[in-house]
Amino acid sequence: MEQLTIDTGLREYAVNGGPEHGGGVLRFNPSDPNVYSRFCTLQNQLQELEQQVQAQSPTGTDAIQLLAQADQRAKGLLAEVFGPGNDFDAMLGGTNLLAVAGNGERVITNLFAALQPILEAGARQCADAKATLAVQQAQAARAARGVQV
Image (cartoon, rainbow, N blue to C red):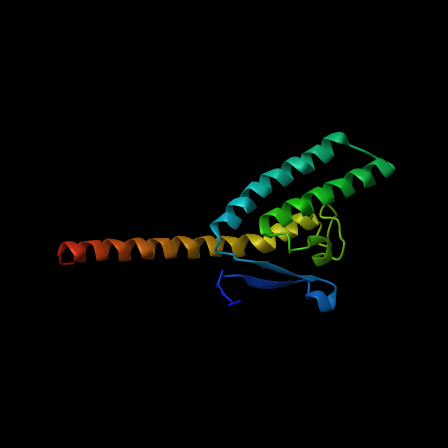
């Protein structure tokens, strides 16, 4: 069988030092508008999930169980955004996304803060490429009609 290799713009990011340091590797195309759209939707979904946890105000083992369930749900949503090959549990060393990190923020907040600029730069790259293509197409159409630019 012949091989067909397609450049999909996939990039790899070593998370927390990569696998050799207890972290992992996140793979996705930061300029993929589908990823950006899913990421924006995910932010709202995770806010709702956090509000649900807070609304239940569990204590003791109920709180631990609820936070574990919320963590599994959040990591599942992240896998939907970035692809099933991205294991956020392994990437984050099994840390619950709703845990508080050393800086006082939730782990999920730190994750989003790290990803946001990458995704925004990717969205700009995608928009710039679309604008460049539109200009090229307009110029080609004018040239085909014999219009001098």
